Image (cartoon, rainbow, N blue to C red):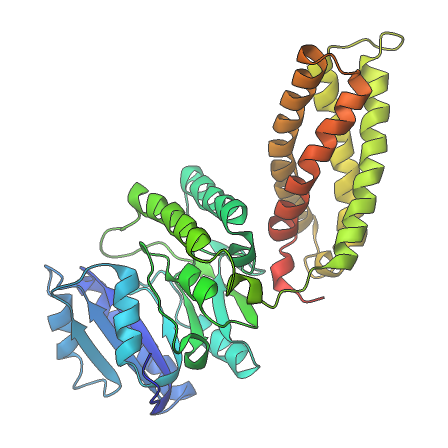
Length: 388
């Protein structure tokens, strides 16, 4: 990144075949930023030589919008590299990126700028933070998005776990936080690169509702999800130490201890129900059915205690039956994955290895505890939205 900065804020708009949207997005952004940062910002449209000549349409707007600049790339392709090339040309102390298709509401920029002014090195617009969401996504796309996040937490937890929406393409970062860093992203998700290689001490998140595209065609493909996973692996392999170890994350010890104590209570509930349902002297139900029912009762117990005690400070800001139901559903889904693993382990230990059913159950519970803790920590109550 160039060290010289002449304006406060530079916003990159990467485009490809966005001719139908470019006029509207430039107008909305200019109107917003003219009021908030008069003559102290710049808009950079970085176009990948669009067949619909988006770059030419953007250039025609420059006479009406003096803060607008346009780059036409003919030798490179890709959203992430477009953002990097824009940042290299930019003059701002704060560098940002926003989609050119109007799916990112421009007014959220003011909240992101406010977070930077309050000391954040990175401010991320998140669909998963409080106040965020998606307007009209199909169940399949919702599943893929959440699945991608869970994969990220498994492959690269100390990077992906810092934000609730690691696949966000709407954020801003201080130039000083990435100055001197070599950014080499794979695919579309440059936020991962900034988190993994930048010197990011403080992260802030702002909720926003992702809008459906009004003009043009969506560029979301299976290839993007594959590249996302490859990018995670690349960061994991290239940064096993160094920057990842220097991340200034505080382990939430108090939450961990509370979560652990709640987990212990869940063990007793699980074991008691498992006895009542499966023991030959009681109901004598089948092993698998007994285990599933016992685990669900324990999950309900754990959720109630965690929602009231472990994450009570967060729950108090997300009041209402609907919000609580959403937390419970997410908690259940995370625990469901652990339950499936738990049932498989229990059957293997009891039916194959011949271990006592209760000892086998305890072993299975212990092996999935870490999974449940980590994913619930990052997903169900969005701990990344708060500080200890």
